[in-house]
Image (tube, rainbow, N blue to C red; front, top):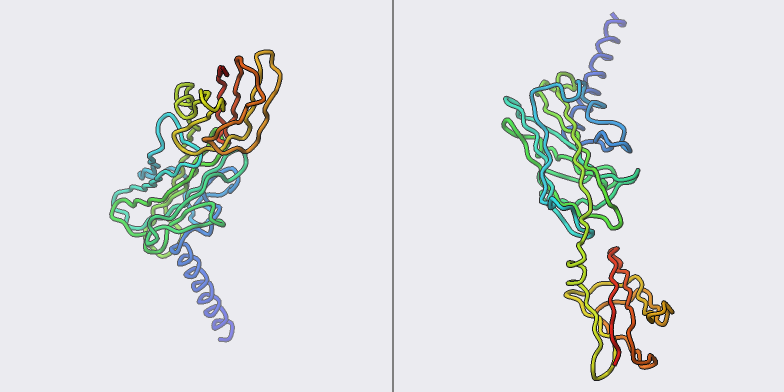
Length: 266
């Protein structure tokens, strides 16, 4: 009799443990389950199913332009999991490049999404698991600087609602984006140089304030005459010490763009 009671208590304890485990997934991914190289795992770490073997479809949509993202610009990201006759869904998304988490996610729908994995990923909330044949989650992402290519890794699942982790279906996908490369015309439209005919200063103008990581002025023989770092543009360079003639202004913007123009000092 005591042995029977022991097994009964053991069975109840296991059931309670499983129930707690299932509930924890309803409140969001435990993190690092996107299938990315850094995370290593996807939703199958908790939900036992072959990957991408079901009839569902996982997609990632964004307003990142086809020519690529711009460093510091914020874009919208939409993850959608679709599968007929399913009304419970979950997901986790992250962004990586060259072995590092890159960019910054932003929560735009707190009722359905929340941060995961130390704010390097986004997952569902408990309220964000409900859907009728499909579920959509939206968020923001701010592009990193000095990163040419990024990869969004997503793992998602459609749950059968049987109150355990068996019988669910898991899906993964990856979307790759590159940084937009500015054309010479775009760069020249952003920053222009000319000489003020009255003050003789070299004027450096731009449509919006930018930071020049480095600004140099050379004579036509290549001799360096002016060397300034971390200079905010627009600005005026006092070059009274320069003789009349042709000079080359070389500017490296903090955003990575390079500009080189000739100016004539009368």
